[in-house]
Image (cartoon, rainbow, N blue to C red; front, top):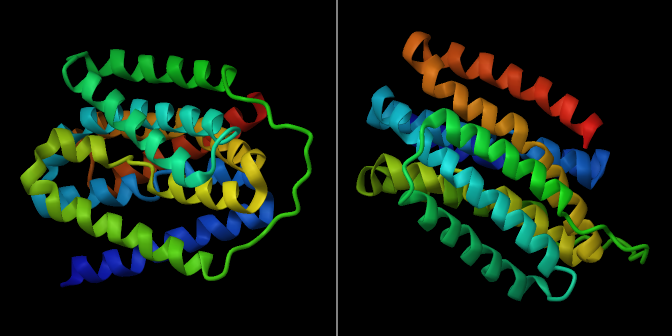
Length: 250
């Protein structure tokens, strides 16, 4: 019961904070903030608390594979949003996510190689991102959007952690960075600010993946040596520093 209560409290709070930060500082900064391990971190933590630390460590390679899929999702959604509405763009981008995940589940690479590959893919994705047009669209905020975001994020958290024992560490890991916050930000930006809003938000998220990937990569080593709290705390600080640098560079 305490774990369930924690999930029910944590996820709506995280989603609300990310949404309000985006409204306060803009889509790009909001995207970078959203890329922090707000969902992947707690899901990994719940894996450890419910399935054991070894399960969490073994889930890290799968989570990193999921980051590659997340890059594919963001890039495909950004390009497709210029031509299609959200209800067609979103499922196609989800298909891209799953296809990339399927490919890399059959390719067994060293953890360090996967980490380097992700960093290269993130840099290439940023280089290949579409440029927002000069067309100005008055922002439009949907009714109850904050509540919808909070409910969806919470349901996803509950579903993934509940299925962890059935899916095993690999697919549980792959689904951990599933673009739930990313989807919510992309769709609401797309609807409220046209494709320009979605592109800027998604570019911010991809920029933040340098730090997010490093956070996950470090867990494979920190969790073996330190407590869960110290492992997460150290990696989160490193994640934040990398994000600050990445925002200035990209």
